[in-house]
Length: 150
Image (cartoon, rainbow, N blue to C red):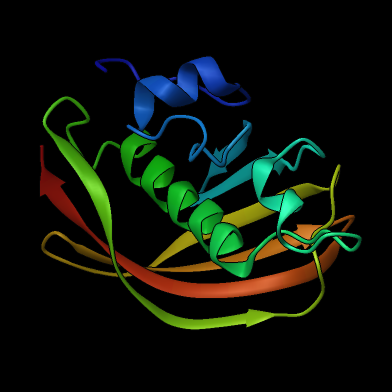
């Protein structure tokens, strides 16, 4: 992608930036990008297939998918900041350094995630993220990812 899109924007442009697709595309909207921080949203549909088994009668979004949402936010940040050639490279998870889950994410919640780069060395990036629902922190995730070739 030669010209980087300017937020806010939805799934059609998100799919031009990162290789994720349904059912693993966890970002429904990029809200803003400023000062090296990206804000994204994931509207958690009540029809999401994971709710059927996690947990029947008391559906909650799995922590691993909250973590994946944060990681995709990091990939969007790197792409929109111009640190990667999206045509030949992508971001791949290399580690979860710390994750804390404070409260459940339920069907029809909008998961709002803010991601920033904490450190960078060569192709390796460390990120810090905060996930909120209705302004309340539901998770904090520190993770790393590396630029990889397709």
